[in-house]
Length: 258
Image (tube, rainbow, N blue to C red; front, side, top):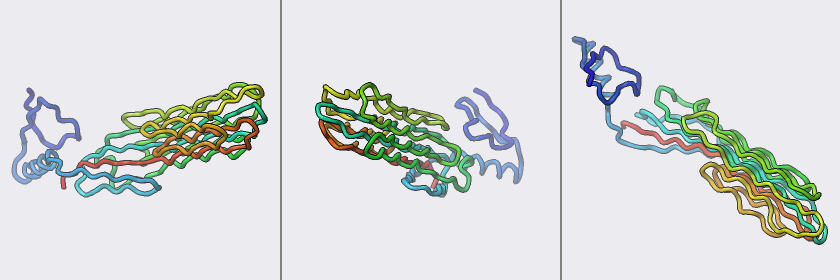
């Protein structure tokens, strides 16, 4: 155990579990420091959640001492596919899931407010050999940031393997996670018919889309940050479009003294 004088308030988090502080001041200075101590150790009395699905501004609730910020990047769109002939099949790849970041922040770090940017959804590739677009990055100012998933690859109608794509990543914060990758697919060309499209990547905390089955367009990604599914065409099916990814998301859990 350590007993040390307290002449001014230490930084948040600087007080350890085995330290006892005493005030080495007199008069008004002592009272001012004592008031700071009372504020510093005041119990949390409420928990408030603010969430965003569109761009905006985060303004802390009165009495917020610290908060837990979470951001999900937007999901990438799935790829589109060309029309396939008789006894042939082809599928595009799914989009990557958005990344995720989490940060523990004090009221001093937030200040009066912080800008919120929501990761845009990646759009699915149009019918034909068209790639999906990437999902957008999501952020709380520059304190907590995650990128979106990559758009899925289109199907050109020739045989062979079509590469999958990467999910987004958390880039700034205390805890950083990647979204799931969009699956690659096998394009059989002539001779074999497969009835599944490319599976999309799941967002770090949200599901990807369902796999497209049969001759169909890609399914949309699940919120938050799921990638869109790749399209599937088989056995004289028409060209199909990929599915859209899901929007990003910001959630801020506040711990308040009032």
